[in-house]
Image 1 (cartoon, rainbow, N blue to C red):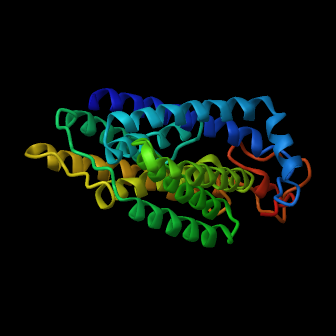
Image 2: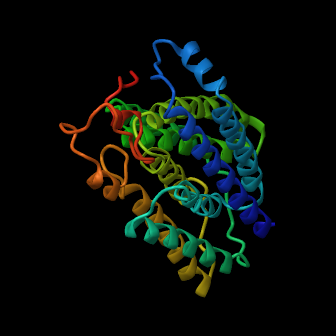
Length: 299
């Protein structure tokens, strides 16, 4: 069953990453979104066909993710999902750092596949432990989101999505753990808000890239801390550790390769200075609303 769970996790990563790409392409071209007019902002999003397609694709990916959690340990599912950050780089002009990041992520997935014969046990976790983890995550995400830049909002979204994933892992066991369902849905809702605001402030890798990074890094830690997931024995132990490291390093390389405005460093260096730009200048494909000196969305 763990092999099937791994395959489902990869399919989930592709769907979620593809959904992020579509949502970013649409949201970055919309008028500024604001929490002061939530219904108006939601209408702008849902009336955009491309954004709606991306949203539905992401929901489908989340359904696959929940199925994967029923079939495989949390840490393995999250490491496979982390490879999905490569999907965000498919339509980007990649520099050397980005290419290294994609290669590292894919290499980690290959190594993970080599260890699938080992069925690492996974526990149910304590309700108190899961609740404390989620509460701390919400507090940290709230503090980071106050900075209201693409990377910080993306990171906040990732921390909140991670808290929701930890709650999902607990809830799939049923019983009293279903009490986590409204909490995890609230975490996903807050993460959704942070991510849409991030899309208007930076490129896909600078916003969704960091979201994917934290969404997958934190539950890998939670798998060991909360759900007592152990490593496989023998040679597979070292290989799986190397796989986790490669996947996460790949995600970090792709995310940290972005310039402060969300563009790639190479693109940022080739843009004309703001003082010499004219109204006829056209932004490059990796530029976003934040890079065009348009009004910023208020969070």
